[in-house]
Amino acid sequence: MKRFLIALLSFAMLFGVCDVQAQTKKKKTTTKKKAAPVVVEPEVKTVELPYNSNDCIFAIPLQVGVPYGPTTPPDGAGRMQEIKADKAHPNLFEYEHNSVWYKFTAPYNGDLEIKITQDNVWDDYDFLVYKNTGAYFSNNVIQNKQLPVAVNLAAVDSNGLAAEALKAAEQQKNQRPRPSGQQGASATQTAGQKSKPQAEPAYVPPAKPKPTIGMSVDATNKMLTKKQVGTFIKSIPVRMGEEYFIVLDNCSPNGRGHTIEVNVHVEAFEPLVLFYDYKAKKYIDVDLIILEKSSAGERPIVKDQHFRGGRVKFVPGFNYTLYAKHDGYFSIYRDFNSNFFMRDTLMLYRMNRTEKGTVFPITDVYFDEGGSQLLPQSDTTLMNYVAMFRNHPDVTFMVKGYVQSYGVNPKADMLLSLDRAKAVKEFFIKNGIAEKRITTTGMSQNEIKRMASAALDKGEKFSDVKIELIITEM
Image 1 (cartoon, rainbow, N blue to C red):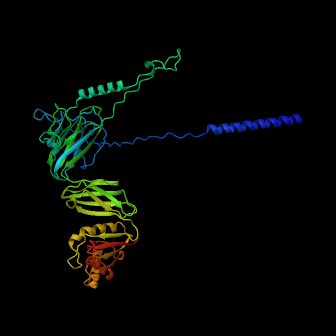
Image 2 (image 1 turned 30 degrees about the horizontal axis):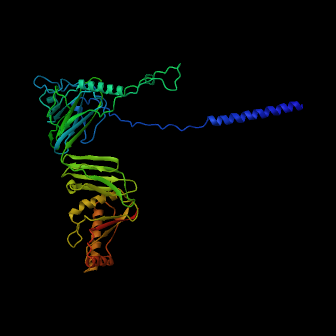
Image 3 (image 1 turned 120 degrees about the vertical axis):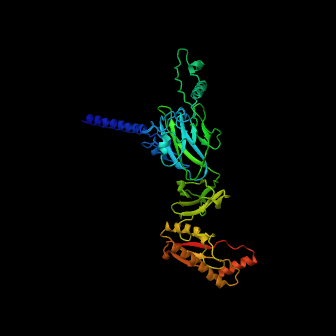
């Protein structure tokens, strides 16, 4: 019995040691390794060409200054073969191979520019530009009674592309390192060992910019025919409100898509537009919309939910509306004519936090001389603030009026500053802001005396502020 107990105890100890070793071993083998970083390439979204867009009556509308694409490949000529060259009109498509129609309206007078970026260097894209003449336009195009105002039929230099590809392949081959077996045995290799042949790396062509064709003010060719090789033709003048059609055709079978952008070149200015928080001393990004207004209507020239600052193109003589917003800040509304900013290289907007005590000093508000009647030239500025407060309906605010005074009659000046504040309040009420949201105040007599003293004794200039809007509750 004693021997049996000793044997049993020994077996239990042995099993325990084995179990501990197994656990230790298991812990060593389950050590986690850091995962290698995964590189995610940015996904390029392809625009599906709409059904029947290869027919004129289903032309895709383009927005000037906004790229369209990259697209899926054009496929076929559609239901109608609208364009076909003949003896009298040789500078047209011989027929539509794989076409797509676009249309746009010129937003202002200028020179037409078109940029078409091909997804494939071997594709042979051609294009024609037609001016819409109104009734029976499509029928006239089909019968070749309506001729294009711009022609780019330039052929692809296939021989040149092939020679360039062969040259690049040869350069790549010459730059490859020789396999180690061809360079002699390694110093550590024994006499009886053979070196394993190494597979040559596959040829990777160097990355190049995608080919582009189109129209440009800097081009010299007025037209490119089928017998010519080229990319850009010279711009043509267009007038505001005119509608144009662009028909783009890929002569290459099994081709790929493209990206197209239309612009109207005009002598404009492009100031840097920024939004700044003076309290935090930093620039912020905003949800920004800028509308360009003309007799042809409105069009967005900027529509960006995360605008971090940049240059914006403004055309002389046009009216614009700017709307910017960001959580935690008051929205900004501005209506302006571009002529007021023609010499500015920077348009810096102050972003004010939505908190009690925030002050909006206003300088471009005008009253009759020595009085409190608002003048019409104040309307644009005040309407911008009306729009802002409409977007923040929970905000209450105080209107404070100011005067420029030498202190001859402080009491009268105090009453005048209050009357000016009341006039601005009435403007807000008249334009839809609830009266209960607005209080008014003017300058105190002490403020007026201090201002007069500074102007007379110290020679300081009067402040340009006419009105202040002070946030009282949120």
